[in-house]
Image (tube, rainbow, N blue to C red; front, side, top):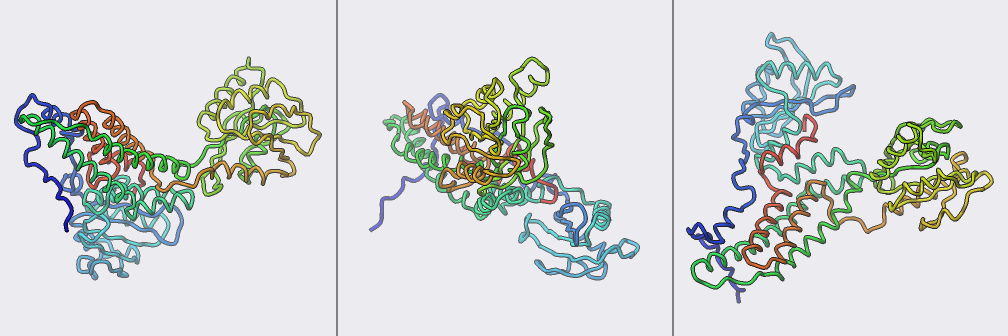
Length: 487
């Protein structure tokens, strides 16, 4: 026994009348008229080249070449063993020579024939000896032969336009290269393997089916039929699923971008000493003279699988009249605003004063840890200051190192407060998912079917920005702006 058949997509969802609601819906399609890019664009007919390995001293350097006609250019430099005669996905030891048959370097040439290559074009990788001289000589020869230097991310951009990978997979390439923790790398690898693509495809299928049915009802109504009610329960079911994804994905920001932890306190409370203890280095200058730190100093370490950027700020003083004091307040407030967690540091060997009250005011409602430094000295600090901190005061001694391990453990616990995100996405993808969710919320509460259909169409458009094989120029430019040359 077979299940119920789906209603076929009507051949003309929008009737010819120009003043009906379906005509308004057709005119409101987001993205209508946006020029789409394809590999046929003239810019992508160029043969591009770039050094794919980091600059500097090393055992080898890799130069990538891609474009239709790339092998014909390479044949000029390898007269005896031409790359155009080399089988795809093979590596050959070869001598790179000038037009005058002068040997330049002994290299490895790897050939990838279209369409079975990273970019979908004829592609080759030349592995030469390391350092800058050999790589520069190879690049100079390629440029003189008619290649041009690839733009940042252009190899991956061509792969997207050729349909070799989706937009989210392309972003995963950059995210893996930029990953500062194992968790961030695993999340990017999952997206590269298509986890996000499959998830988005399932939601998109449900939305498009719902959208088609609503538009069919609107067209039926224009021809004298009865317009159906807003399918609020179906819309809210999809919206609820998307909300769960957005809330889980929002947690991935710390793993991908890292957490900001600002250390604030009065002058000479030991902020720079605590900073050095936490980053296990001597990044900040420490001195008995108060106010040694005039500018913010930062360093990043991985704690509990999360990249943590510690920021050492200038001391806050109760005397706010001087120019330096006012600057310290401005800079510290800015650091607190950008912080995910604030470490409020107090000098346990001195009674609380106006500067300490200024520190409390600066913390505001931010998640914070109260740390009492100089635990190796006699305590003279007022314990009542800890009333706003859930964990109370954590005593440490930056001089002896006592309490530092406990502080790290407590900080790690705050960073690991949840079970961890089921799906890791970057900021752009999260913005698109959130916009899709918001459009569905509006669709579910719409009073008319026409409004619900418009908002559902908007949700489909927002979802398409998360992951699509070929998209508009502005989205591609935004994605590939952070790529390095050679990717």
